[in-house]
Image (cartoon, rainbow, N blue to C red):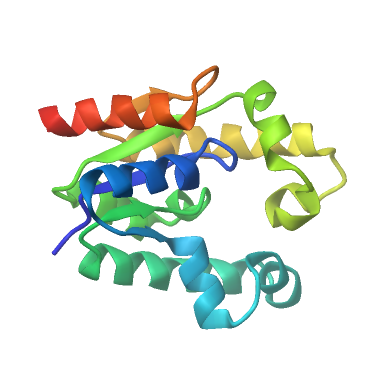
Length: 173
């Protein structure tokens, strides 16, 4: 059993919103690995990150990805940093299910992110949220490209419009 589709991409690109629409359209469940981490840890991602550190969070994230890839037949949304793990990237490349990268620019996501203190990667470091987001994206872009079967830009599109593009791609896969 593997996911029907896996969504990857940066924070704020719309993985959760698009994933919910896709799941409804396909008659399946949406699973989000950030929610899985929170369920296991019993705390929000930001708290796990702050109290236990990034390595501990990434270990929980990796375990959530492994479980979801093995047992979830619906739409799977991965945390933005999950592609940092080489084993996760290898699993996604080997996956028979399509992996769709949702892309976005800072200008698109800035208004969607809200309080960046709840986004541990953006809250860390001395740079402002925009500079940190751009730094994170620069470090992750090659990993996203490595795992993606399809790339769907989200700038200027509603979640519905993005979901419709992904549905068309799924019909071709």
